[in-house]
Length: 144
Length: 107
Image 1 (tube, each protein chain N blue to C red):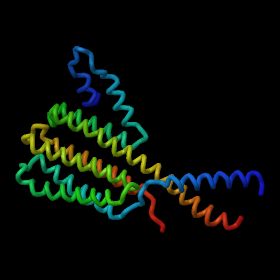
Image 2: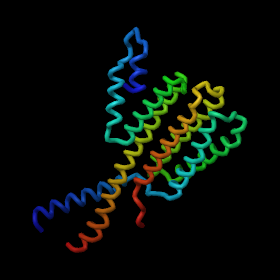
Image 3: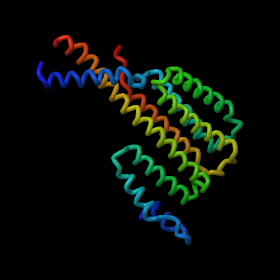
Image 4: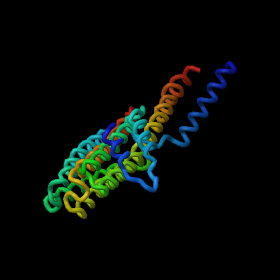
């Protein structure tokens, strides 16, 4: 075996042991996650946009239902364990964004933050979902 | 002159605490950035500033929206991290499939 071939194999074996020991802690693409993200994006952004015009009491039931849907989706992601911790963290941050919109809605009379404030807040929420959706799309497909 | 630069230039700042030129340059450069994310955030900031100038947002509402940009940035950082991990995963799996399973069988 030539000197170059030996060096190449040594490097390959080193890489194998490196990846083997450390693993690559990232989950594979999950169609359920993708569907949940796109569905929750539509549900939450439509709801938050309505905060500019509808009183809180009229939206209360929808807010509770949406918060529950977000919680269920988070639990699904968390259940996949450490390799999926990045996506679970994204869900936490998105849920926090939604919760802060709800608090602002509850605590401020219509127009206090601006007549089109919640339309813009809804846009931010949509952008947050878009980032999480494209994150899921970046993951590899499981070939096993 | 855009509404955004007009608004920044028109702010009364007797203490000279606001770096007006730097803010305008920051937004102008961000709007030309290669990253879709950076360009989108520059557009957000510009639009909200114009809305503040037009009275569609209050100062409180404007501040709340700008603070949300921090969360978007954190989400994008996670996305970049996942992208790097996915590349490493492809390399590790490629080595296992092509080198260990195929090449090793031939040598």
